[in-house]
Image (cartoon, rainbow, N blue to C red; front, side):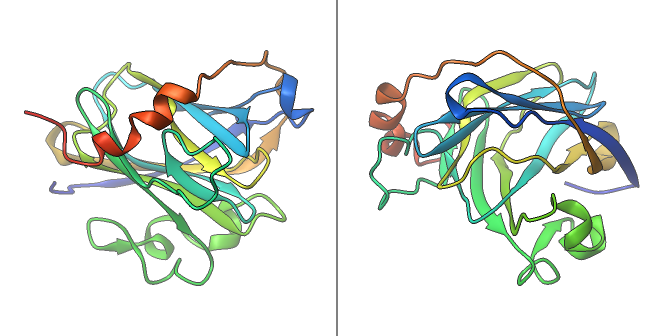
Amino acid sequence: MKKQAYAFIVAALGLLVAPAAVSAATIFIPDVSITETPAPGGGVYTVTNNTADSYLTAFGVSNSDSIAIIQGGFDGIDSLFPTFGCQSTWCYSATNIDASNWGTTIAYGGLTFQQAFGDFADNVDPGDNTINWYTAVDGALGPGDTSSDFFGFLDAPLSSMALGILEGPGGTVTTFQNQSVSAVPLPAAAWLFGGAFAGLFGVARRRAA
């Protein structure tokens, strides 16, 4: 995908820290909203692409000592960390970015995370030491689309700071990142785990044409 322009947008986000059994947290960005919902052993993100014409090439959320995964993995089997999965029109991979690889890992189009987003410390909440990062491998979450029960993380409570990359018409690339946090109350969301985990390894491939 050819990049033609980069626009850096600093936006506010919302976070609620409350008992895991009854709370969720939403990160509000003009073009993307991410809801964090507690799940056994970690949490899950519901991601909405609010744009009219751009695709969510990649995004991340800061946390502390967490493990980024793709759907499933919340059944207590800590040896299984699925890092690839597909839905109907796209596939994503999951990884973790921290201060040690921030300056050398490519975020997009030949740019490292340092070059695309600035210093690591400016992209994480105080006390966070990692970013759960999800990258589109085949297709991407499209304009107006929402993904639930797909992007998740293990071994950590909810956290807050978000950043990411959108690709628009003509290959125009926009990055988004956050600098501040505010509290936003939200109701809890339910997530069914059994079926998602059972079918996980069957989708560890590129989506069917």
